[in-house]
Length: 327
Ligand SMILES: [Zn+2]
Image 1 (cartoon, rainbow, N blue to C red):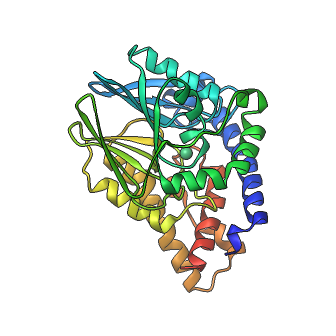
Image 2: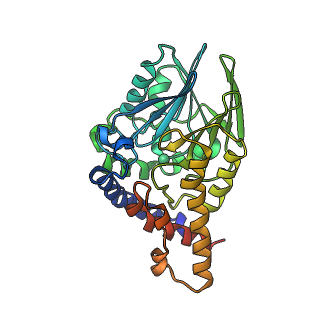
């Protein structure tokens, strides 16, 4: 397929840099919700308690920058009597160190497991740091395939956004435990289910469900506060189903892949409604003979309250158009 050739991958990386730069500028200069905008504190991570022993670590909503060390996402962890389970290891070695500092502010217990919820850099490039601390890493097989296949692009974008100083010390390291669709584990008496419901933002996306706490860590299946990003490697069709799988759990707390912990209701508005609305509008546009050159005219303004709206809306609708041409 056309979008899988080398040129396509390379140009998508370039696009990501261009759009990403615009996104971080938009976030720096015109925050829509200044008081709740994590971009304002120079890339620092915000620790938020979700329920007893369960925490979110909320990073900036904008792009990778030298200050945020590639940690432009939301991470999370669970403290058990046996040790810590971390969800996503950060975008760089130094970024992983910063995540570890946030964990250490809560507990001295070691990080026993790290779960990578997808193939994007901030989900896994900090693995090497945590493995050196003795952690075992868990990811879906699809996520590992994706991580390996996009490695060059990932470093290219990181280098052009976070910069080479932020990347120093980073070594790619892949999951010790790889699963097809589902992996269950019990750590210190706490049960976790890790599920790959199909492709979403990236081909190997997974969520982590704590059934007793009714908390879900959604990875990039859910974005709140900022506009989600549809990339050449995303699948908007399957993403809709992945969201439905998370919704079927009826979580009381959603820790999204980007943004602060929230409710399913809010997650539905910013992720599910966006994807389904856009897919419906693009289908209608194609039925009327609309061409890709005009597709960015489709009105998305009901989502303009989300950060990065101006910089990402054009690419998102173009990606969905290209994807739907093949459906
Ligand atoms: Zn992400």
